[in-house]
Length: 339
Image (cartoon, rainbow, N blue to C red; front, side, top):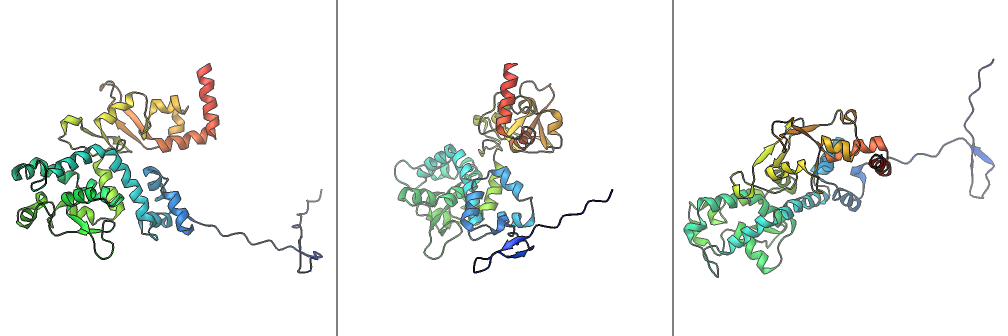
C-alpha cells in the first residue's frame, strides 16, 4: 500500500485594492509578537502588581531576569508605588502601636498640655521603643505624606522631618530638618542621639533614606509573617514570644499566631497545616510532594509530632491542578460531606 501524501497548505485568497480575490497565496500572516511583563503600559503594569500579595510578588521575581528587574528597579515610578502599597499593610497592622507612639510624642518636653520631664523622655526604655518602631514611622510617612497641621506636628516630633522647599526628598516630598522645634537644646547637645528626635545619627535618618523596597524588607524581617505586627521580644504584656519554623520554609511567627493553627483558620492566615490541606482542599499526601513546608511545635501538645505548615498560595495551586476549577473542588467537598 502506497504511503499517503502530505497535503499542501490550503491557499488563502489575497484581496487586492479592487476587491478581486483571484490571486491565491500560500503565505501566512505574521504572528503577533509576544508581550512580556516589562513591555506592558505603565498604567496596566501598576494595576496588576498592586493587586499581588507578598508571596506572589516574590514568586514573579524568580520567573526571569526581566521580571526581577521590573519588580526591583524603578520603572517609570511604578515599582516604588507597588512597594508603598505593601507598606500600608504593616502600617494598618500596627495602628495600635503607632497610636501609642503619637500619644507619647504629644507629651514630649516643651509641648503644650501635660509634658513629661526630660529624664522620663530620655529614659532607656522610651529610646528603645522609638528605635524599634523607627522603620514603621518611616513607612507611615512614605505611604501617606502628612498634609494637616496635626500630622505635620507628629512627624516633626517623631523624626524631625519637615516639608522640603526644593525637589522631592527621600520621603515623598519631605526632607530632614536640622532641629525640632521642641528639642533644639537636646539635638544640639553631642550626646542627644535618638532621644533628641532629629540628630544626624538617629535611627529615623537611615530608614527615611531607604527606597520602599528596602524598607519593606526591613519591616518584613522584624514582623510576624501572618499578622505583620512588630512585636519586641521583651514585650511580655502582648505575648510576643517569637517562633521561627524549621524545615525548608523558615518564617517568623508570633506565639499568638502560631497557636491559632490548632483551630479553624482565619482569613489573614497565610499558612495551611497538613490536616487542613486534606480537609479543606481535598489533597492527598502525594499531591503535596515537592512543596516547601515549615515545622513548628504542635500547639495542642508539644510531645506530639510537629505540625507541617505550607504556604496557602502553593496549596491553592496544587488544589487547582487536581480539581481543575474551584467548582470542582466545591463539588468534591459537598460529596464528602454527604457521604
